[in-house]
Length: 280
Ligand code: ADP
Image 1 (cartoon, rainbow, N blue to C red):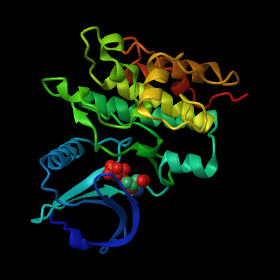
Image 2 (cartoon, protein in one colour; image 1 turned 90 degrees about the horizontal axis):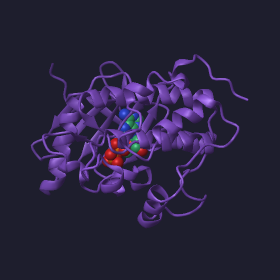
Image 3 (tube, protein in one colour; image 1 turned 30 degrees about the vertical axis):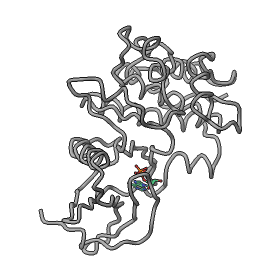
């Protein structure tokens, strides 16, 4: 079908990312709202490569737990725009800032949807590599969806690309800091388990209200983080949480990436399978 960027009217700026600007737009014919991410054409081959990768990933995804991309517009100037479903309630990061810590039952709901999304992506051989509250978007139907494929990688014939340093180091797994010690024993790792670690850190943050691996207020510089993640105790939840929640987070935060649960295993975990979780 012949939809064009001209069919949409920009309403407001939703945010600026590393690679471009995201607008809320209105489809003139139907008055439906969408998000349009506009990435300015860049002659830098590295940026272009990233962008083409993002397009490729988005074209291959179709899951209720992953933000849907309806169309990609490429202009002769080299600008590329992504027409996405509009998530009208912001991200879990903004929600945490405005409403504070979340209840266990709310977190179980988030965990269920994000684990489903990760299971979907991993089954398509896509590693997200940047799971964190800011990249989990929410809408008024209480749906939580994985967004921002800017740094995702498709697992190709070599694992090399996964070993390059990208993404936000705060949510990075031990094997990304030290593949020799925490990887698969050959100084390598596949990246899937890294997304699960990031999910565990994210869920802890939603419960505690602050980034859980460092003392409150400490700036997460690379060296401090590496020490906390690789040499520190595996972080744990406070005493008063349910057994199911504690166990789920433990399964995500096994330092040994080969023992960490996969998304498929986590989907069978009692924390996700109960309709409601007992909150003391
Ligand atoms: P980048 O990947 O370049 O860092 P993002 O894709 O993270 O940029 O988007 C920047 C901002 O736009 C984010 O803060 C996010 O909240 C908002 N945003 C992105 N996609 C959507 C969407 N589909 N619906 C609503 N807001 C969005």
